Image 1 (spheres, rainbow, N blue to C red):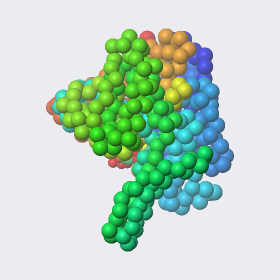
Image 2: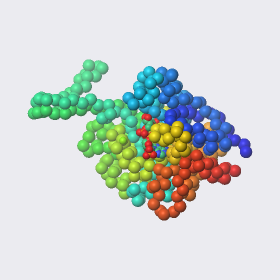
Image 3: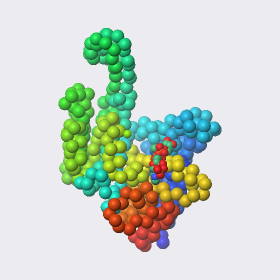
Image 4: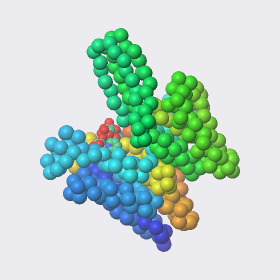
Length: 404
Ligand code: NAP
Ligand code: MG
């Protein structure tokens, strides 16, 4: 059988532990037999980041800017315990995702992969709900203070021109806690544009919510910027029959629970942090969640939302066959290959990506699944829990049937 050819290379960021093992298995069993993959390869494993002084992460992010599409394996973000585990580390390297996000100035979209056999906790959610989290500023870049006597707290801005603005936060008659936070016009605009682009790409409605009835100026600015930015996208939204909808966060929460799903919910940083955990838990499993980083200039990076699954890796090292779920990593590859195909006009590559996703979902619907999912099926139908290797072989068989 002739393999599908690519024109532009895909930026491939390899990673750590169990997901690195799955990465190679996915390539060998599902991709390479059908696609002559062309990648610009970066090894983001912890030891290689250490050996290159983390330059490899910066190079991978810059390559994504240049080539437009990347696929990333989960990576270890070192902490104190990892410093002991890997004594050769010369530094506690920063999160690669943080480094990549700051270079691409992106917004993170988290979407669940849904199957009929596994029902969300919320019965009326028939379609996935994607959370778009603004990943800059607010309480995540704030300063705090505790005071122990009466006094006055002010908020002062001194402009580069020398102009000053001062507001009284509070006249305090006793000990208090204070916090100062900010966001930037540029970051909010990028966030808005990334949301509109993503919705056009995935043909879904966009919801955006803040608390602008209370935070009239701060959240009001978010609302106004989204409204202004939307003007440049309105015609394309109309052409696709999709809508942009703003509402108060309280109202959004109630509507989300009553909805059928099938839309993107843009959230401010804190709201997105909290709501993405709520939504992903309600849909079933972290192992079924994809994560896409969209830069306002166009580049896109696809990955699984979960980490390197350390516990399974140590079992794998002891020679055990693990039942680690590869679905989110497979969908990172299919998402990236589909995007590459669309950008380069390669219909065969797009068809392949669609077939890979369909084969994966049909395998799950047939009840062949990894152990993390097997326990979530409640329909009484057949379920066969399998190890990762058997699961991938089953998908490979279904895929051959579709492409052959
Ligand atoms: P994790 O790797 O997501 O795993 C947490 C637990 O969730 C696992 O022990 C496993 O539960 C379950 N799980 C997650 N993915 C699974 C899958 N594909 N199949 C089956 N079960 C799955 O999170 P972590 O243990 O907190 O972090 C491990 C490492 O990953 C850390 O070094 C962290 O820095 C890194 N991390 C990287 C990323 C990223 O690169 N995007 C994101 C998060 C964390 P059971 O053990 O009960 O089976
Ligand atoms: Mg959270």
